[in-house]
Image (tube, rainbow, N blue to C red; front, side, top):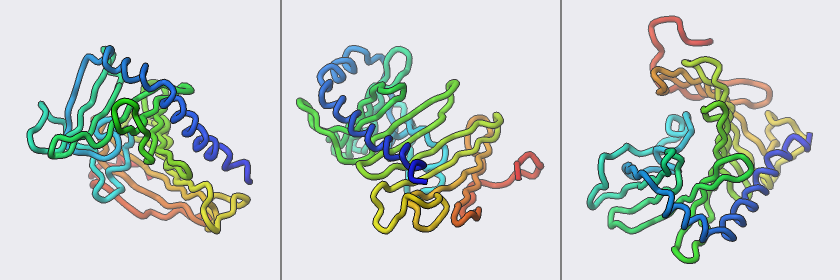
Length: 239
């Protein structure tokens, strides 16, 4: 069963490769942002990638988590987030400012191994890498397929299946590579596994989450642990 976890450890290793690529190519990456930037948007203060965070569940299941609210213009004397895009609306850079107008963190977007990565950086010349989550975003047929936030020893991952236009399933997991007391030879649902898994059943109306059912998996048992939104009076929801 140990091989089951190899994919997760490979993602953690890939993080190191991506960070090395960022450091080695930072000058051309920064210059590309400056020359390719065509559009800029703003939002209120936000977690992770703000309004560009592809997760459909994170702000629904995590207390105090905010994607931010899109703003028409840069606010004064308030924290905010700036989003820069090229002429195809591909994201180039995110910059987060505090209420004093000081830059807290910058995320640079790069393509690597057929995926889009967002890397948290500080400084100017040279940049330095913040020891926080690196974001990996993968799409299929124009929709989010897999979203991972990765640290040096752990990852949070969401894998999406768009079964219908109004119904999505998301397998969600949290993995700690060197978790004390864990055993990589056991099944994922067992208590000593370094992997926790959940399932989100998501119901959409006009591309927005209207209802979410969140299930925990443990010892081969499925348990509903959280509900978001209200059930409609019709019978359109899946059981």
